[in-house]
Length: 144
Image 1 (cartoon, one colour):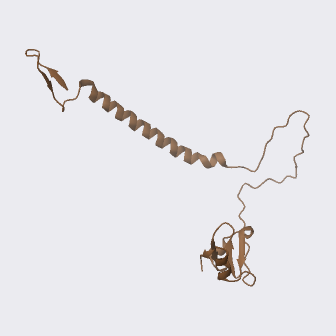
Image 2 (spheres, helix red, strand yellow):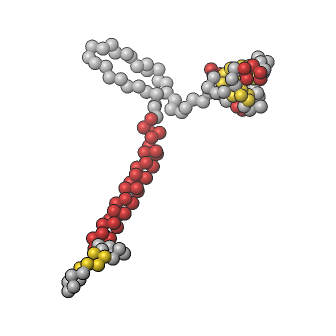
Image 3 (tube, rainbow, N blue to C red):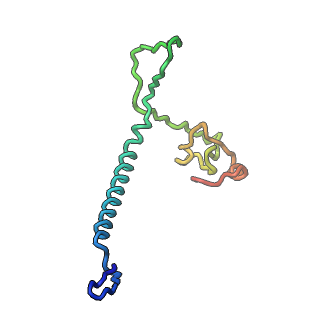
């Protein structure tokens, strides 16, 4: 900070001294930055908590039809749709026909008795006779 001696007119500079308003300004900037960080953090947390609610589907579809469009009757069998998710049990692997198991969505092959092989959906399942067959198609060993 520069100071002027009123008697001699000398100008002196003190690098340690801060101008009067600069301390208050820097403090206020820090407070604003802290508030912004808190708001962004809380907003991100709340968005993460509510995202599953925004993307869930209830299985009911409502569509708008314009006048003159064909009306589709709603079945009134009295049955209410289940709101719990359906869990499909995996189809067991027959070791007589499937000696080694691979997946269309992966590059690994597994022994059919392992949990890795049992977790592969039937639609994605590929069977190999030998490990050499699997390696020839680009697969690498997985659960053995």
